[in-house]
Length: 491
Image 1 (tube, rainbow, N blue to C red):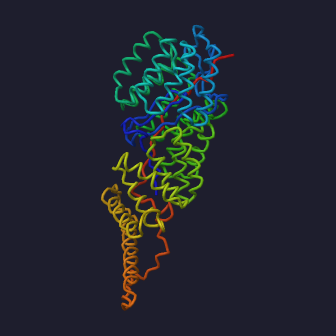
Image 2 (image 1 turned 180 degrees about the vertical axis):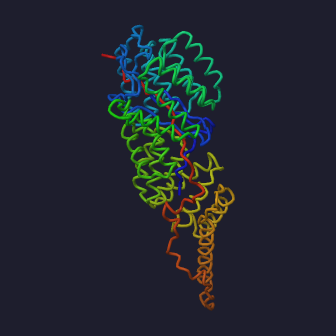
Image 3 (image 1 turned 90 degrees about the vertical axis):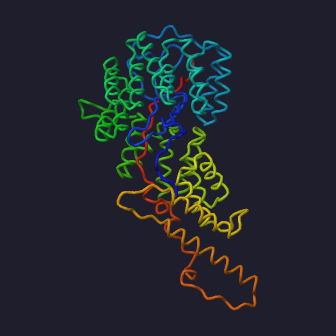
């Protein structure tokens, strides 16, 4: 069964920070590992409260998760308005993104940028889509095009820098942001982006200092608050992370109300911490809250799906994971969990497709071998596979998992040996039956106690909860901060 263990959405050690119509500040592995980021806007008409307040949307646009006004408090009056043709294509792109149709969104944003060469929001949102589609060079180019139109356009500036840091170029990201900071000394967003880059590099002290500096520039800049909490989480200071998240989501009493109780990113981080601490109920509540606010948050979908699989609720896991893959087609754990959901739903061909995809992409993932072993062991009449071949494959995959499985402190047992024994017993019964059919007049062979064991009684591994060896349970990775795309030019 698939584990809730969070994995990178790409092979990069920086983790995958998808942004679509939003900028992302990704989480690099620090202590607990990298985390795949939350992604995308809630809906074109419902911007989150994650940006600076006290400044209204800039002329010509508004954004998901981030108000489109400069965090310095300046007016942003130099921003051009999209023409009608570009606006129509841009809005169509936003609608496509809401459906999870990234290819259509990309096409529409390209059309918008072609219809109006100064449609900076279209360039930015195109960059977000391209980043989600792992088109790194194209994403960087699109972000730069947005800033070539509006040099102080913070969402594109931050997106460009964080993507550089995530893809192994933190020094380039720092140089870029330092140049921008010299030109935009009052920008809380640029300073907070520097904090995120330092956190990705593992320099927590500098990250904390810079995030605090951003809050001095703009005390209500919520992304900087989330950066503080996320950096604590990366650095394994879970109590401090929870304290910071409490201030954002709950507040500290009447005199200190919550700063941003509907911050999806903050709910996600708190859900991941609760999950790591074994607090199942509170973790589910937080992950569901994050997903209600931001349906495109892939990490929330993946983590919730693992809980559903553990309880045997494969249908709800499937409902979470199929949309997740629309927003992040290369998410290994989403494919892994979806394969297990299909197995439990009696869809072996679909299960095999998902699990083989994971195995092809990264054969070092031990869990995929375990899941394939379960699939071949407990599927009767596997299409295109003889019973003997299925038993042999189950044995091979489970033995491979046994070789690769992570060691667990205290020698926590798992059911791998039991499953291998069951697979061998199943094969012996199949062979014995085949021999009987080939020699109908032969005396019945004596049945050993092991062979006589009822094969119908599936072991604990048939349920997702037992199927997941304790060794595979690991802390979930943290999400990355993000800014969403602009919802379109003002009419």
